[in-house]
Image: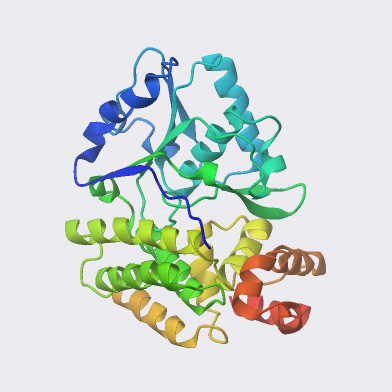
Length: 359
Ligand SMILES: [Fe+2]
C-alpha cells in the first residue's frame, strides 16, 4: 500500500494571485492573525509586492537566493519570525522559485517543532504539522510547490538533504502563470528542465509505479510541447510548464530521482552551483545512463539557443575531487533507485571523477 500526501487545494489561472486574500481568511479562523511572507529578493521593489494583501500584523521577509537554502539560514529566519511576530503566525506564504518555496516550507514546520532545521533532514522526522502554508511559484520546474521536501545544504555535514515529510506539503497553492512572464530565458529553461529530469529519472528507476509514471509521462509531454516549440515562454507555454512542474514534483513525491540529482548535489556542495543549472550541466554528461533523453535534452537546448557553463570541474585539488565524490554517493536512495543496492560498484571514485571531468 502507498500513502501519498498531496497539496490541499490549488488555484490555477492568470491573475489568480488576486485570490490570495481570500485564501488567507481560512487559517485566521483559528485565532492568530499574522501572515509572514517569504519573497524572493529578486522582487524587492517590484510591483508584485503591491499585489500581496500585506496587512498591519504581517511581515515580509526577502529571501536572499544568491545561494541555495542552508540549515543555518533557515534557523535564522525562524528566529527572526519568532522575534518579530511573537507567536502570532496564522500562515506562512512563500513567493518565489524553489529556494524561496523550500525556505518557507521549512520555516513553517520549524515554527511548530522544537530544535533546528538540521534535526529534521531526512525522512518523516517531524512530530508536529507546521503552520498553514501557501505556495506561490514565480518560476516553473523545481516541483517544490508540489513536493513533500524542503532541500537545504548542511555545510557542517557536507550534505544537501531535504526535510521530507507529509507536513512539508503546502496547504494551498496559487498557480498564476502571469508571474513567470518576466523570468530571464536561460533561467526559465534551466528551471523547466528540472521537471524534465525529475520525470526521466523517475521513469528509469526501480521504484516506479503506475501513479508516478502517469504524472511523469504527462509532465514530459508538456515539457516537449514547451521546449521544442518556437516560443517556450508564450502565455500558453507558461501555463503548460507551470502544470508540468507541479506534476513532475508529484511524480518524484511518489518515487525517487536517479543519477542526475546526486551529481548535481555534488556540484552544489563544492561549487555552490544552483540546482537547476547544475542539473543541466550534469545531464549533458549522462550519456552512459540516459542516452536517449540526453539527446533530446541537447535538442531542446539547441532549439531554444541556451548556453551551458563549460569546464566546471577544471583544475581541482584532490580534496575537492574527494568532496565531489562524497557529496554525490551519499544520496543512497536515488542511486539505489537508479542503479541498485550495489551502486558503489558502478560509481567507483574513478568513474565519478571521470563523469565530473566531462562537465
Ligand atoms: Fe530537482
